[in-house]
Image 1 (cartoon, rainbow, N blue to C red):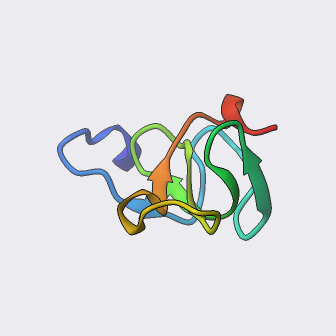
Image 2: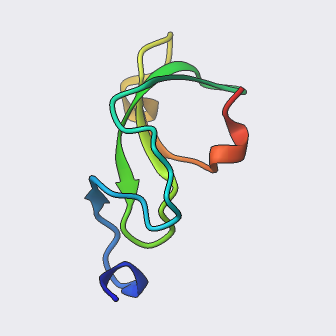
Length: 69
């Protein structure tokens, strides 16, 4: 199973934990509003592009779906 390869984390289009958030606007507890752009190939958790007042280095990150409000 490719998603169990922990050597390289990639952003993939399908969540191995069956999340259905791709392309949806979400609100994170601390990072604010963002758009889900993919999922971690290892954990299945979402990667999102955040467009609030973050520094450019904080704009795309992976986080637990439990942190979505």
